[in-house]
Length: 377
Image (cartoon, rainbow, N blue to C red; front, side, top):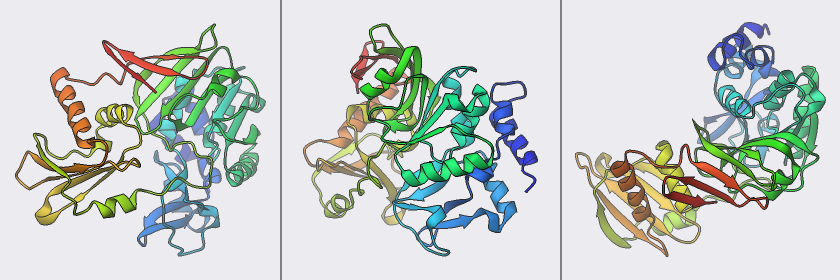
């Protein structure tokens, strides 16, 4: 495959000539790192074999989009032809533009030691090796032994040799680093990250269940200070097992016809996960909500909110209406929390999550503040 014109086009999409990331993107053969991936099909996911159709392969590998490489416990490399795999994505080759954004927030310069958390396909590690100019300065880590083996072999094929480690990214880290950039989200900052961060080092990560990127520089007391960036990003959460906990299907089914406590919201149904500010603010108030959307009778818009503590909400906006009928139950009123966030959004003109100051203790306790607002992770 003559991949260089495709890589040049991708570089033009996610960087610009003369920038720190122009050459790394232009000179990295992403297709070698992602030979097979999953695409929706057959009521689940079907593996796409890149080498079987080089045009499709190049078009996918050098598009600025995420390629799902693992669903549940099944990697695309190991999926049989025509095998329909069901479940949620558990690994991917993140869209190159977002990889560059995260690495850019890391403020990488030659000579710095980087920990690239969540190896995935190895693409972020490859870009970092190019940028830092010495592959030995890059350590890339993932919890999945197959991912690290496959990435190491493919990185070797393109002439890149970072240190590849199989380990839990929230546990003890394999060394001391000037930069920690995480391509996986965490619910709170692990204390081990602060311990492994060199003096004046910098960490970059996203918060689980939000679109928030946190950047923070290490302080003399062993903690860190920084901010929530104005850019948006959402990554898969850290995991210790082969896959993530099962969706709350039983709660969804058991409450499908339950009237619960009925009320009327003054707002139409919102696809919360597409409203980044609202989604992020709501998660900080009540982490762990599972959101679903769909269409009800006569084309009405519906949304469901489910939580592992048994709280649930079901909301419907009928065609032509601007209000919403809400049914909810369990120990908390999830939809009431959502409406509180939306009222604040309307009354203040914004929500305080983006641009918030971040303070992290040496133990990882993280506080976000902006104006008179504060949240603790």
